[in-house]
Picture 1 (cartoon, rainbow, N blue to C red):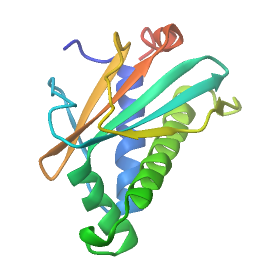
Picture 2 (picture 1 turned 90 degrees about the horizontal axis):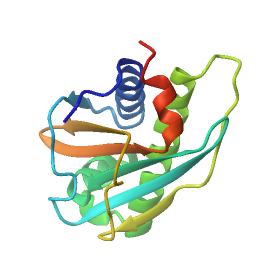
Picture 3 (picture 1 turned 120 degrees about the vertical axis):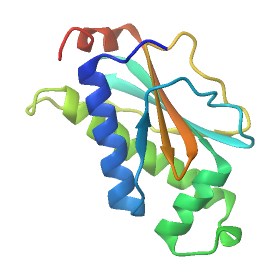
Length: 160
């Protein structure tokens, strides 16, 4: 797997680690090696369109087991008491928050941006082909992934 562009890599790592530390009190670590994001089953996926100032798409893939662990930390509930609706809502919230921080890191401080609403699915996930960028993370040895699609992301590849 080719390394992500430095600016994109730093921005995504900061967005993911900040979000999970602040929301779930969990440490996410970036992995710099390929991982099959769809191997564990079942898997939740969240898609989010970036609408302005450029168009692109962000996708987060997370095994249900890890999502339940994160939700248990956030809601302070046993994992077996978490409903599918709670898990889907959390996926939306995580992706919204991570995407907002990611875009804030990439764009000038006075630049506004627009995003669509996340769409969530379970067990109907497909990785973006071909993604412009892909990032792999883990929490307590459990992996999850992000992908970005759209040619507009390439403008950040030359920036460091």
